[in-house]
Image (cartoon, rainbow, N blue to C red; front, side, top):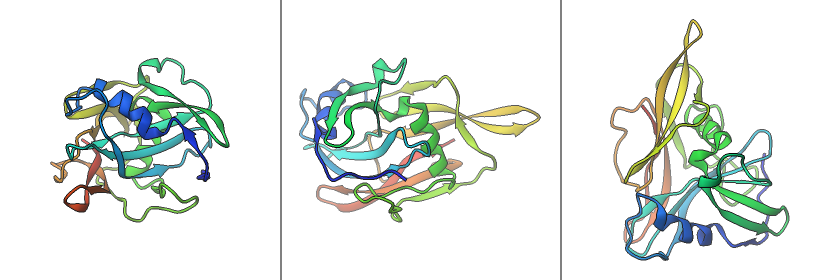
Length: 215
């Protein structure tokens, strides 16, 4: 399991997101530098120990909650320059390349593993500690994997990643992983599986909602 180091990260994840978020189609603000704060989320372990993965929720001053899953690596991810938020200096691990996790195949595969119950969500701040507040459901048989090369589509509310499920006879059924970038307190809408997490919403306290769905 990944170790959470008590050290510095310069610039921080929120600082990188402050520069990256205004360029995304789901951004609801009007300024170029939103006032963001961490509001919730969870970590996911990479079995190979190479990629850090965090499903992060941030809230801006306008009380919009954004889903901003991140992956961080010790070297650039080939072919993913358009997904790069920037680099940070980690006090223990050195330079980290920070990416939008929806465009990182390792991160997508591990998020699918959490959704189907094959891997546990981990606490954001403590090593070797599952996050029991994260709930999952999967109503379909078989293993889900990202379709490679990754096929990612953004809209003004969601990011959709193509995924595949083995359907027998060597065939693969095509499904979609939906990441609701602007978080709402809504149901599953007929999804075959989902991940529910908590975040702290200004004026509402701790709330929960879907942060990933498969249809």
